[in-house]
View 1 (cartoon, helix red, strand yellow):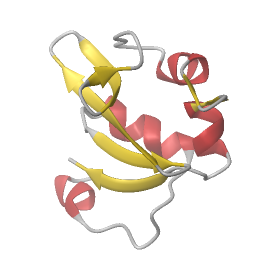
View 2 (view 1 turned 180 degrees about the horizontal axis):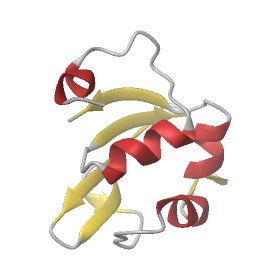
View 3 (view 1 turned 180 degrees about the vertical axis):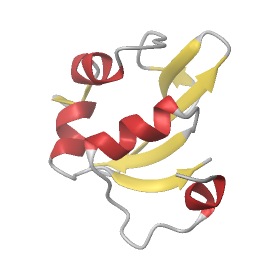
View 4 (view 1 turned 120 degrees about the vertical axis):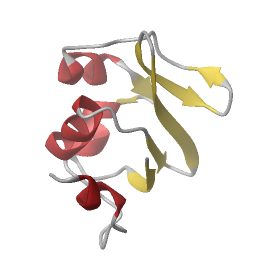
Length: 94
């Protein structure tokens, strides 16, 4: 994907787990909502962290993205399952 592909508005606010992992691998930061709650996957100097507002809800991870996304539980479902089932609504990709 080129940089312009990331900057385009998404015609569909849901993406696959594979697309989510691709964005994360390329250093993108992602804001999404699930069941009315907003989450943010940030990209810091030590790796990625999942946030609700200013509270970290995951440990920092920098590789094995699918494994880590399978371990992070939001409202009794893993992030991996949320995106496998296309239940996460993308708000912003930075």
